[in-house]
Image (cartoon, rainbow, N blue to C red; front, side, top):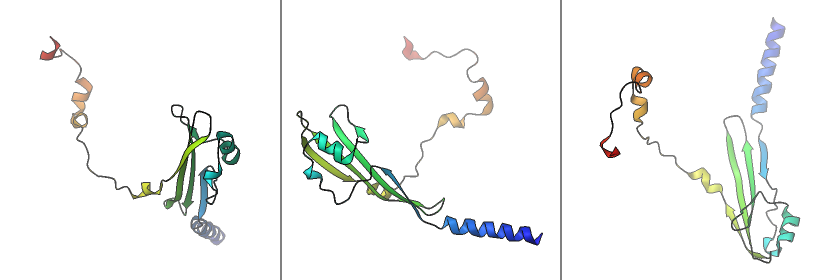
Length: 144
């Protein structure tokens, strides 16, 4: 009995220690922060240096590259450390017209409003929900 108690305590301690370890996970393309994007002159150079884009805009033919670094400390403590999007815009002859780098970290600062819209369907009773569509329906005056 005492032996099982030691094993259970050991497993609990191991779980507590491992849940405090910080893990980093990366999403998207791993892009060097010091890379000079203005050195890329055409679409071929962009794809050879950065790889295939995460998304290609079919209308404006823009290339989107996305990068995210997330830190997980435990199941309940997860935060995004860095989030970046790079957009390349090309001319007709496939030369780079412009590129923009967007910092998407401000998404974490959005305050969610707690206001709710009243839903009249939820306020109906159980009997009205079951038998509400049975019987003659009253025609509206707008149907004429």
